[in-house]
Image (cartoon, rainbow, N blue to C red; front, side, top):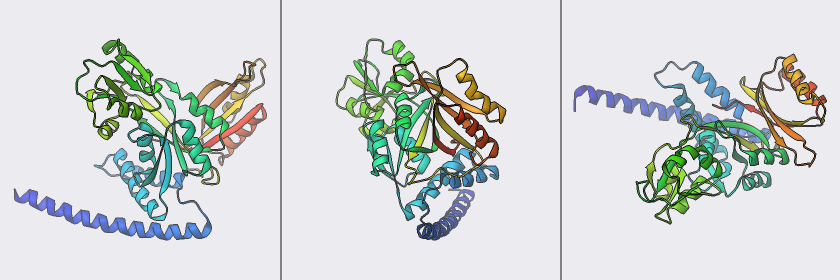
Length: 360
């Protein structure tokens, strides 16, 4: 071993000891903050505060660490400090190894109590009933569009959105062997099957495509039969002892899914402004000519940008629709508040689904 390498390792060890001392000092300060919060009855988790911390560090980051790495490191630091006060119980579509679990860990950090659920409905029920403090559900994919069940549940539920996370999704073909030969059944969540349909049409045109509640459940089932394969993450493959028979089979190489973090308002009120915020709404309008155009006018008049506009049938039998709208900004900003007030006056139905910091 060269003297230079020995010297560098000694310096790294010294820096690591300094980091550990600083992290423990930060944890001690976080404990003091927790005591004040408990005395005031304030929530432990403040997504806008954590977003401000990460954004501030990224704005002043001198490198060579990339900003994405800075965000990941500080989420874990804040997660570990939060866990000293009270670990967050987070519900998501399970079992272990789903992209929903990955999104939960990416948003809250790994120091959480996991509450895996068998369906999106159960995630909402867990967060509503208090089995979990928060729920994480997918709401939109950049190639397949919205996750309709999540939107329907947001409309009906007392939960509101307090955060979001965007996940780069890589779908792999997993099975007991590392070859795609002889596969008779492919198991996955319907969204994953749709996101990989071109690859499946080309490489496994005769294989049955079987929808299951989650990709991780598909991986669990694929581990029970040599002719079955699952579409899931490498994490799910590791969890169930499967090999990767084909890597990254999603049709869109930049496949991303957006997840919403939901909870009851009494668990966490709408986050305060972080500087990069979003308001999600669902509205309906009277069935008359020009009504949809009219609800967009207040946004333009007050200079508020709309980042999403989706329609869903109201299931009233009258050909009526709900419109899901995302707008940039925070209701504490006068121009946003004015736009929302004018918009509400035009609607037959109006519900704020959540106000939250914009995710990565």
